[in-house]
Length: 200
Image (tube, one colour):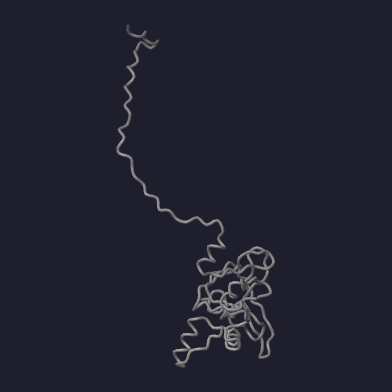
């Protein structure tokens, strides 16, 4: 039985049959797994990078792969000197537009300030304008926390655990106490042609 005609006198066409879309073969997606690090400081430490933090708010201000044992200091103010031409230096600082004038023995020095992005404390400076390529960066140790504990491993005597303040002091300690490792002892024996006398 056909359905009753609508008031307009025209019948509605029968509904078209719905066809399911043809599905092809599923795509195989290969996911490349990457390590997930819950602590970025540990990750950077494993990669050999040193992370320096602001002493006031603990915000990281600098990442570098420079060897902490070889960082020189300025004679004028004792600031740590980072050579950006020979080491990786990644700054997270706010650059102040106006330079700071500091009186020195030979005249006036211009310092272009790098401040902490969180609290605004001055953490370092350069002697060249911010627009120039970064070459030397001076870090104030009183405003920045330096991970010196990573340096101690390189300045620690393997025999007795003595921590020397510098590489020269460590070598002096080894010579005075005869605290040499097997590799160093073999090298000295090869040079001198004699072997030490082992007692006991």
